Image 1 (cartoon, helix red, strand yellow):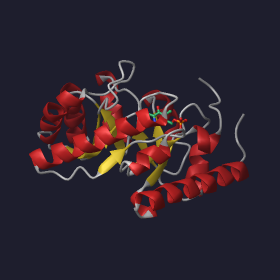
Image 2 (cartoon, protein in one colour):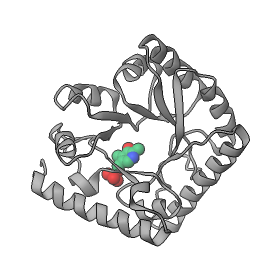
Image 3 (tube, helix red, strand yellow):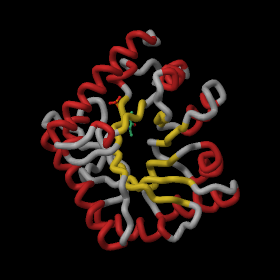
Image 4 (cartoon, helix red, strand yellow):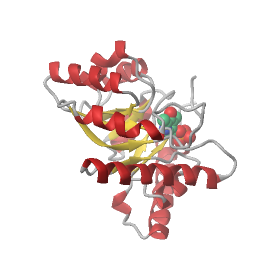
Length: 233
Ligand SMILES: *Cc1c(COP(=O)(O)O)cnc(C)c1O
């Protein structure tokens, strides 16, 4: 069922309070963490809710689903791709998305670069890293991160903002926290080795955002805690 706007606003305040608490605990400012509402598997209404609440970007994990929603929301809303990307969809993605968080191999970086160039734009991206070494999760292996970054930096129509990971799935939140710490360490090493800032660390979801913020997350991607159970699969 579609959540009501008032209910969404209540959830939003609770999440903001949670983010503020975690920032305080980490000795960070509240402004250092942005909230990315994840609207996947929900009707387009929740993207409009996000816009009406002042949020300016949303996350979607399927290209087709996102493209189908874009025309029904203010065109200034930015759409970030947080799901796997195949080459045959790269053209539409490079034209229509505000950022791609899931660049996990050199080949897709090159294809996006070419299409972004043809579209006359520079496309912001994050490199997705399997920081938890979870065989079920996508993302480049930690060992392959330098090669991937090197390839992405050669793409003049891409701007590499930082890294993204999906927290290791476990009942033990310490496991997720170690995964987030690994992503931060990976960023620090890459940053030093390549002399680039890579400021964005997209990590943390509904169930593990506090752990992510304690380890340096700059963007938490939140679906369920904002919009409730996903409406369709
Ligand atoms: C679905 C999804 C989220 C949001 O997950 P919730 O647990 O609903 O907050 C975050 N990141 C990615 C990559 C996702 O696919």
